[in-house]
Image (cartoon, rainbow, N blue to C red; front, side, top):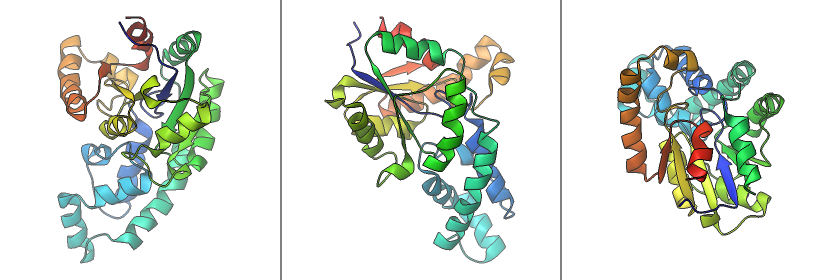
Length: 257
């Protein structure tokens, strides 16, 4: 039987909003493209869940990307170049989020069930507070408004450090951390949850791991979808996720099992 939890902490893009976590991936690709560096979607998605500046630095440090940058500019991308991309990333991401922050189907109902069971609702994100000032009102208008939102720039370090989870627990007034369920669609988010001492749930279909919009998912055959999900599921198991769900919409079934 599933234990009872005092709180659940959700990630945002790909977990509760933006089916497929499309918005950040597109912007990472664009800021490198503007510098004549063509990264793949897989490269853009690889570090997803990190704070955004760290994400850009990680992509710039990939061997293939480093080689392209070296060939074009004569040296690898350093802090100055990463800072410039990050400064460009923020307004572009803000613009993109205004049209890419729809609540994922089933989220309001799942959150309502969590509340019915007496759980407080927290959230953490690799987005900055400035970016969440765009996302949160859109989500609220569509039925999702957590009790607490902690952003990557609210703490000294983002994921995989547990600080956002600890800060959220403090805001919710919840302890110990083994009374918390952490739900995320990235491996680094699962690692952060484990580092916090919480029980973790990985989201395999609506988020970064699969990286497809709802329409794209609906165009797949059941067999093709199952095959595509399998690779992500294995990564989440390796990261230590306790439970795997295709969507947060499936969380009530897990809680009531």
